Image (cartoon, rainbow, N blue to C red; front, side, top):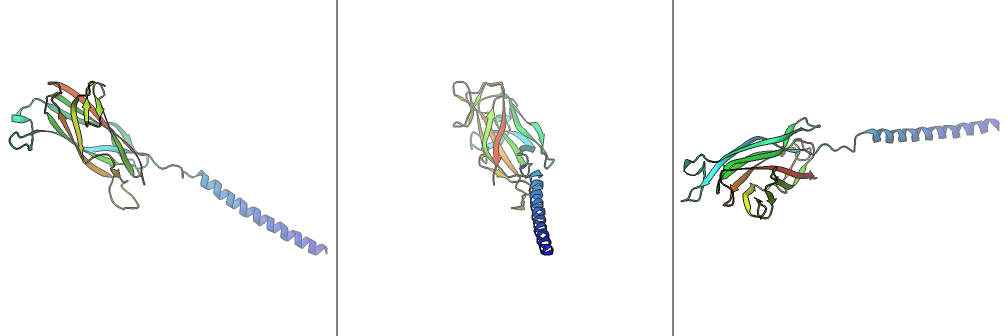
Amino acid sequence: MKEKTLALLSVIFMAMSITGFTYAQWNDTIVISNTMSFGYWGDLNMVFVYPLTCTEYHKDPSTAELVEGEYLGKDVGSSNCQYDYEITDTDTGKRGNKTLIITISNAYPSYEVHCNYTLENIGILPLHINETVISDPDGTLTWDPVQSALVDSGGNPIINITTTPSLVCNTLQPEDDPNTHQHENQAEFEMTIHATDNAQESHTYIFQVELIYEETT
């Protein structure tokens, strides 16, 4: 009888030990998984990258076609475009700039500049552009999205700005996107900058372009 009792107790003890061991292993697995960085999804970095060019144009009065250079070969206005606020993505090690700055010097009515630039998603997540933010660092002009222009305090358009293709609603994939296996992380755009009849002659205008974007699936 004692032998049967001892045998039964041994079986119960072994069963409890196995159960406890299994629970401990399961519990340890959960603890280990919780220490892994599943909550980190990478930096969201869409940036301006080179090449970057600004070119003057004018409309031919007889054909209305765009011709490179100022009208009648004049050399009055000048333009300069540059990037600012360089960053490095912590996941990919790639670098780029958050801001595009454009300076128009000695501007006059109908002076026109085309700025060609490139955007790149240097991170590891697909990014969707929601909005373009154009601003005057001096605070003299404000952006009016309805008129697509920087306007003065009276709402008069001073600098008309259009981008081809439209920046908004564009999605850039990470370079090593495992779903598409394609390099859709870059896109080129052309910004047309046109001084209106309200622009002051021999004046310098400065504005900067930034983007608002979010992760997308």
